[in-house]
Length: 341
Image (cartoon, rainbow, N blue to C red; front, side, top):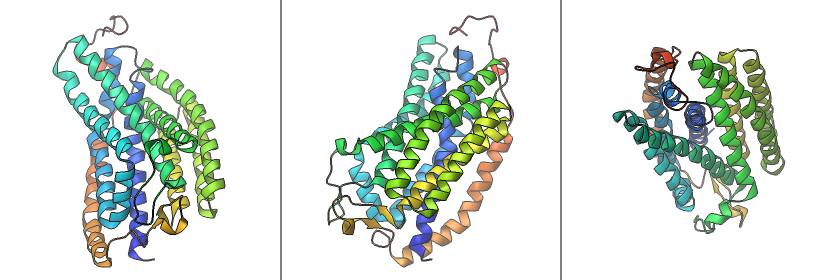
C-alpha cells in the first residue's frame, strides 16, 4: 500500500470519527425542540454536550486540513464546487458555537429562546447538508479535464443526494436520542428512548433505500460487507434501546454511522471525486495526491500527535461521564409550567 492510499484511509477515519462524535451533537441540537418541554430540559440537553462539542469539531478541522495537505486537488475541486453548501455548514457551525456560549449570558426568556432556536436550526441544516455533500462525492459530479467543477448548485440537489441528506439527518437524530437517554435521568430520559424508537424506524427505512441504491450503482464486495454491518448495527441499536440498554444502543448507533460512512469511502476508492462527464477526468488517490515527501512528513507528524489527541479527548469524556437532569439545573422550579422553567 502506497502512502496516498494510507492517507485516503486516514482521511476516511477522520470523517468517520467526526460523524460519530458530532453526529450526536447535531442530534441533541435537533432534539431541543421536539424532546425538551421547557427551558430547563433544553438546558439539560445542551449540557450533555457542553463539555465536548468543541472538541468533537476538531475532527472536522483535522479532516479538512489533512485533505488540503494530502490531496490538494481534491480539496480545491471539492471546496470550490461545493462552495455554497459548505459555506452554509460553516456559518451554521459558527453561529451554533456562539449560541452555546451566549445562551446563558442573559436570563431573559426571549434572549434564551432566540439562541435555542439558533441551536436547533444550526444543528438541523449541517446534519442534512453533510449527507447531501457526501452523497454527491460518491455519485460523482461534473468535473472537466482541468479538474474543475463545472456544474451548478442545482446539480447537487439531485434525488440521490437529497435522500443522503435525509439519512444523515435521521441517523444523527437517532444517535442524539440514544445519547440523551444515556446521559440524562428522569422523564426526559424516558422520552429520549421513545424518540430513539421513532427516529430509528425512520432511519431504517431511509438508510436501507439509500445504502441499497449506493451498493447497486457504486458498490463492490467491500462496500457490501460494510452495508451489512450498518444494517445489523442499526437493528441492534433499536433492540438495545427497547430493552433499556442505553450504553449498547449508543455504541450500536455509533457503529451504524461508522459502517455507513465506511461504505461510502469503500464505494469511492480509488477515486476521491468521480467525474460524471468522463471517467478519465475523475480525481483519484494517485492523480490528486501531494508529493511522496509531503505525505511522508505528514505521516510522521500524525503518528506522534494523534495518540495524544485521542488520549486527551478520551479523558474528557471520562471526566464528564455522569448523568444529569433538571434537578441539577440551578434555580429550577419543579412546579414551573411547561416552557416557563
